[in-house]
Length: 375
Image 1 (cartoon, rainbow, N blue to C red):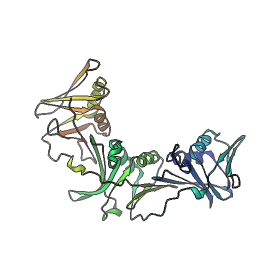
Image 2: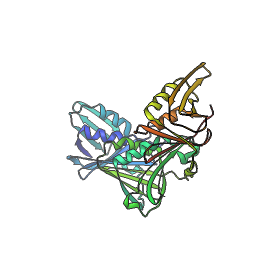
Image 3: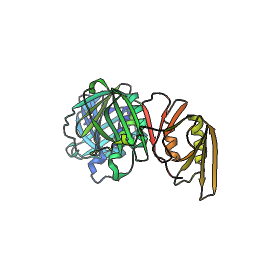
Image 4: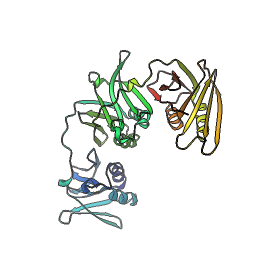
């Protein structure tokens, strides 16, 4: 393998390919990125055995085709520090199994492992395909991802549950995330190509996290393919394939209250600012704040028994329900309120212990459920 390329394309491709790589894994080849020069392109591949990413760079000057694999993080750290203006020459010596890199007066040598050792994933039978615009996929992720769980024992909550569903004679593609304390739901009209397909898959958090970092640079649509075990995202010159979480997502609809006897609307900005101020006094461990509801008034308060401090604020609202206190984790409440863009949000509840719905005043694609806590 012998070729020349520019830093800008190489470092951009390496920047997200190397994010998949496990730097301290027990299998050496999984710390490498596979480089294959052929047919006017440099193909890059990396995997952690759950997620595999492929990317292609157009190359005008391939003197000799070939392949090898190089420590991904080391290569990326070298490339990003090279001057922008100088071309990069790569050549692989099959006898010594070394990759030589030259750029201006800089010279580097990398120990390599052969392509034969690289775990190439087998062919997969993708049965369902549909396209999403990049801004729609960005919205789906941003509105739901934050609520997914980090708890390993409930691994089936460590991702986004993406599925088809029907409501009021309309078909939707819906994403749901929950950690048991809060739930985030976002839905769009079902893409035409999957109108007759019913499915439900749990997409791992790591994949969603890495995908989100790439979306802002995607101008075209994103093709999504599904098999029984895997999901594939294709855009520009990049393909990401991931195993799905093998588990059953809980019946989340049971958590969403169908009938709520009490409700109030409030200016989102004013409410968020008040919660921000009051939560600064709350205990670092519990992050608890209390909402006291009385006729046409909400009182937001917090106390810190460890430090002996307290804080309280009042906001006028339209409310005619019973007087009661509801406690919430302030971090969860703030994160949910930050998802909305309209001026007013609506909070619906039955009592101080039942799940609480938070949504905006329009017929929004978003819906959030937050579990109260004792304060």
